[in-house]
Image 1 (tube, rainbow, N blue to C red):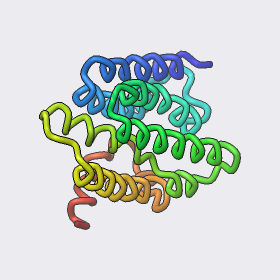
Image 2 (image 1 turned 45 degrees about the horizontal axis):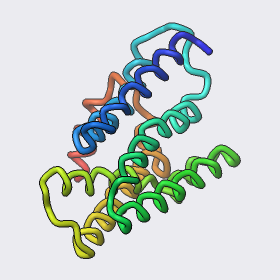
Image 3 (image 1 turned 180 degrees about the vertical axis):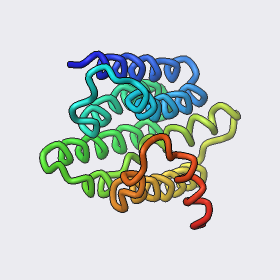
Image 4 (image 1 turned 30 degrees about the horizontal axis):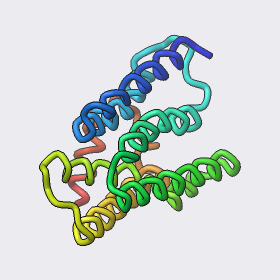
Length: 177
C-alpha cells in the first residue's frame, strides 16, 4: 500500500464519522469527502493509487455503513427501506468486483445514499415522514442517482477530463442543459 493510498483511506474514513452525530450535515460532508480523493490523488505524488475504482468502492462502504448505522434508529419502514437499498448496492458492488464492468454500477445505483440524505433532511427540518414523503424521496433519489451513475459509469463523461479541468466540465454540463 502506498502512502498516497493510506492518506486517501484515512481521509475517507474520517470523513464519514460526522454522520453519526449530525446525520444530514454529516452525510453532505461525507459525500464531499468522497469526492476529495480525486483532488488528493491529483495533487500528491506519494506512490499513486493502483486501482482507483476498487479502492473508491471499498471506501464507499465507510460512509454507507455510518448511514446504515444511523438509519437503524429510524422508524420500521424507513429502516427497512434503508436496509434493502444498502443490500441492493452491496450486491452491485460485489457484481462489479466480479465483472469489472462499470455498467453494473449503473444497474445497481447507490440510491441508498440519496435516500439517506432525503430522510435526514426531513428529520432535520422536523417534517412529518409519511407514505407520500417516502415515495417522493425514493423517486427523487432514484432519478438523481441514475443520472449521476449515467454520467459517471455509463457515459463515462468525466473519464475524459483531468481533475484540473473540473471547472470546464461543470461549464460543459450546464451548457448542455
